[in-house]
Image 1 (cartoon, rainbow, N blue to C red):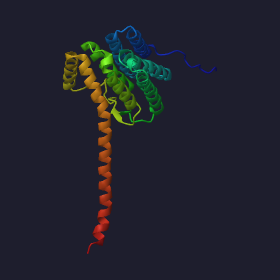
Image 2 (cartoon, rainbow, N blue to C red):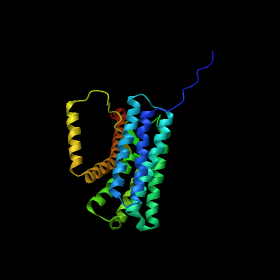
Image 3 (cartoon, one colour):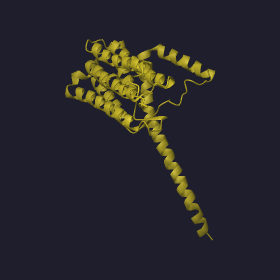
Image 4 (cartoon, rainbow, N blue to C red):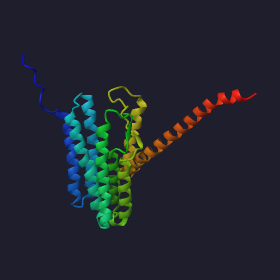
Amino acid sequence: MDEQKPRRGIYLLPNLFTTAALFSGFYAVLVAMQGRFEAATLAIFAGTVLDGLDGRVARLTNTQSDFGAEYDSLSDMVAFGIAPALVAYEWALSGLGKVGWLAAFVYVTAAALRLARYNTQVGSADKRYFQGLPSPSGAAIIAAGVWIGADYGIAGSEVSWLAAFITTCTGLLMVSNFRFHSFKEIDLRGRVPFIFAVVVMLGYAVVLLHPPVVLFVGFLGYAVSGPVITLVRRRRRKVTRKRERSARQAPSQDEDSP
C-alpha cells in the first residue's frame, strides 16, 4: 500500500483574521504618513481586536497549525511592532532627531524580542500569565496616546519628550520579566454567571464615554499591573521562606531550653 501523503494547504478562517490584522498595521502606517493620526490609531485598535479573534477562532474550531502560529507572529510584528512605532514617530518623535528615532527603534526591537521569546516559551510557560507586556497592549498604549492628542488637537511637538518616554518605557516593559495576566483561563465555550454579561455591558458603556482616554487609562493600568503583581508575588515568597526558616529553627531552640 502507498503511504498516505499529508494533506497540503492552510486553514482559511483563522488566517483571514490574521491577514486582516496585518492589513490594519499596514494601513495605520499608510495613513500616519498622510497625517491622519486618528485613523491610524483606530487601525491599530482594529488590529488588536482581530489578533485576539484569530487565536480564539483557531481554538474554538480546532484549526491550530504551525503555519498559523508563524504567520500570526509576523502579523503581530507589523501591526504591534512597526506600526505603533512609526505612528508615534510621525506624530511626535520626528522632531527630536536621533532621540526620536532611537525611542521608536527601542520599541520595535523590544516588540521583536518579545515575540521571539514568546514563541520559544509557548510550550513551557504558565498560560495564565505573560512574561513581559504583550505587544498588542503595548501598541494600544501608544495608539491611545496618539489618539488623545489627535482628539484634543494637541500637536505632537508639544509632547514629544513625553511621547518618547512612554514609547521607550512601553518597549522595555515588553522585554521585562514582569508577569501579566493572560486571561486565557476564561472559557468562552462554557456557561458564565449572568453578572458577567452585565459587567461586559458596563465595560462597553464606560469605553464609549470617551474611547481614547478610557482605553489609554485601561491599558496603562494593565501595564502597571505587571510590576505590581510581580512585586507582590516576590514579597509573598520572601514571607513564606522566612516563616519556613523560623519553623525549622523553632524545634532546635526548644531543645536547647532547660
